[in-house]
Length: 136
Image (cartoon, rainbow, N blue to C red; front, side, top):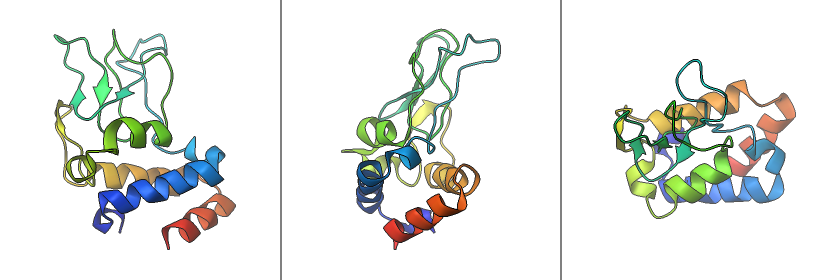
Protein backbone atom coordinates (compact mmCIF):
# COMPACT_ATOMS: atom_id res chain seq x y z
CA UNK A 1 0.00 0.00 0.00
CA UNK A 2 2.84 2.43 0.76
CA UNK A 3 4.29 1.90 -2.71
CA UNK A 4 1.13 3.47 -4.15
CA UNK A 5 1.51 6.56 -1.96
CA UNK A 6 3.14 9.48 -3.76
CA UNK A 7 6.54 10.66 -2.61
CA UNK A 8 5.14 14.08 -1.69
CA UNK A 9 2.36 12.52 0.39
CA UNK A 10 4.85 10.26 2.16
CA UNK A 11 7.07 13.27 2.96
CA UNK A 12 4.06 15.09 4.46
CA UNK A 13 3.18 12.02 6.56
CA UNK A 14 6.77 11.72 7.80
CA UNK A 15 6.98 15.42 8.68
CA UNK A 16 3.73 15.20 10.66
CA UNK A 17 4.99 12.10 12.45
CA UNK A 18 8.30 13.78 13.28
CA UNK A 19 6.57 16.83 14.71
CA UNK A 20 3.88 15.10 16.74
CA UNK A 21 5.59 11.80 17.66
CA UNK A 22 9.38 12.08 17.42
CA UNK A 23 9.82 8.89 19.45
CA UNK A 24 8.13 6.93 16.64
CA UNK A 25 10.19 8.74 14.00
CA UNK A 26 13.31 7.45 15.75
CA UNK A 27 12.25 3.82 15.26
CA UNK A 28 11.82 3.98 11.47
CA UNK A 29 14.55 3.87 8.81
CA UNK A 30 17.41 3.44 11.30
CA UNK A 31 20.63 3.18 9.32
CA UNK A 32 22.84 0.16 9.91
CA UNK A 33 26.60 -0.12 10.45
CA UNK A 34 28.86 -1.02 7.53
CA UNK A 35 30.46 -4.42 6.94
CA UNK A 36 30.82 -6.94 9.75
CA UNK A 37 33.62 -6.22 12.14
CA UNK A 38 32.87 -2.52 12.08
CA UNK A 39 33.24 -0.48 15.22
CA UNK A 40 29.61 0.58 15.15
CA UNK A 41 30.52 4.09 14.03
CA UNK A 42 30.14 3.49 10.31
CA UNK A 43 26.42 3.93 9.87
CA UNK A 44 24.92 4.65 6.48
CA UNK A 45 24.52 8.36 5.76
CA UNK A 46 21.39 9.38 3.88
CA UNK A 47 21.91 11.02 0.49
CA UNK A 48 19.97 11.45 -2.79
CA UNK A 49 21.72 8.38 -4.32
CA UNK A 50 23.22 5.24 -2.79
CA UNK A 51 26.99 4.98 -3.19
CA UNK A 52 28.83 2.68 -0.80
CA UNK A 53 31.41 1.32 -3.24
CA UNK A 54 34.80 0.48 -1.77
CA UNK A 55 36.75 2.70 -4.15
CA UNK A 56 34.70 5.78 -3.26
CA UNK A 57 34.89 5.33 0.53
CA UNK A 58 31.40 6.73 0.77
CA UNK A 59 28.67 5.39 2.95
CA UNK A 60 25.85 7.27 1.26
CA UNK A 61 22.52 5.48 1.10
CA UNK A 62 19.18 6.35 -0.47
CA UNK A 63 17.62 3.21 1.00
CA UNK A 64 15.59 3.40 4.21
CA UNK A 65 17.70 1.66 6.87
CA UNK A 66 20.67 1.21 4.53
CA UNK A 67 24.11 0.18 5.76
CA UNK A 68 27.20 2.32 5.30
CA UNK A 69 30.66 1.52 3.98
CA UNK A 70 33.03 -0.18 6.40
CA UNK A 71 35.54 2.67 6.47
CA UNK A 72 33.81 5.97 5.75
CA UNK A 73 30.23 6.98 6.50
CA UNK A 74 28.15 8.64 9.18
CA UNK A 75 29.23 8.45 12.81
CA UNK A 76 25.67 8.55 14.12
CA UNK A 77 22.73 6.37 13.30
CA UNK A 78 20.19 8.20 11.17
CA UNK A 79 16.40 7.79 11.25
CA UNK A 80 13.23 8.72 9.33
CA UNK A 81 13.61 12.50 9.74
CA UNK A 82 17.13 12.29 8.25
CA UNK A 83 15.89 10.05 5.43
CA UNK A 84 13.24 12.64 4.55
CA UNK A 85 15.63 15.61 4.78
CA UNK A 86 18.61 14.11 2.95
CA UNK A 87 17.09 11.55 0.58
CA UNK A 88 13.50 12.41 -0.29
CA UNK A 89 13.15 16.20 -0.17
CA UNK A 90 13.47 17.42 -3.72
CA UNK A 91 13.88 13.83 -4.94
CA UNK A 92 10.43 12.44 -4.06
CA UNK A 93 9.79 11.03 -7.52
CA UNK A 94 13.32 9.58 -7.75
CA UNK A 95 13.58 7.88 -4.35
CA UNK A 96 9.99 6.88 -3.59
CA UNK A 97 8.90 4.11 -3.66
CA UNK A 98 12.24 2.89 -5.10
CA UNK A 99 15.70 4.19 -4.14
CA UNK A 100 18.33 5.31 -6.65
CA UNK A 101 22.07 4.74 -6.83
CA UNK A 102 24.81 2.39 -7.90
CA UNK A 103 25.66 0.41 -4.77
CA UNK A 104 23.54 -1.17 -3.50
CA UNK A 105 21.57 -1.55 -6.70
CA UNK A 106 17.94 -0.50 -6.14
CA UNK A 107 15.13 -3.07 -6.09
CA UNK A 108 11.61 -2.13 -7.10
CA UNK A 109 9.70 -0.54 -4.19
CA UNK A 110 12.66 -1.06 -1.82
CA UNK A 111 12.06 2.12 0.19
CA UNK A 112 8.32 1.52 0.55
CA UNK A 113 8.97 -2.07 1.64
CA UNK A 114 11.66 -1.02 4.14
CA UNK A 115 9.35 1.57 5.73
CA UNK A 116 6.47 -0.92 5.87
CA UNK A 117 8.73 -3.51 7.51
CA UNK A 118 9.78 -1.01 10.19
CA UNK A 119 6.17 0.03 10.82
CA UNK A 120 5.20 -3.60 11.42
CA UNK A 121 8.28 -4.85 13.30
CA UNK A 122 9.57 -1.85 15.26
CA UNK A 123 6.38 -0.23 16.57
CA UNK A 124 4.12 -1.31 19.41
CA UNK A 125 0.35 -1.49 19.07
CA UNK A 126 -0.32 2.08 20.23
CA UNK A 127 2.34 3.47 17.90
CA UNK A 128 0.86 1.53 14.98
CA UNK A 129 -2.53 3.08 15.75
CA UNK A 130 -1.00 6.56 15.69
CA UNK A 131 0.72 5.87 12.36
CA UNK A 132 -2.49 4.47 10.87
CA UNK A 133 -4.31 7.66 11.85
CA UNK A 134 -1.69 9.85 10.21
CA UNK A 135 -1.69 7.75 7.03
CA UNK A 136 -5.49 7.81 6.73
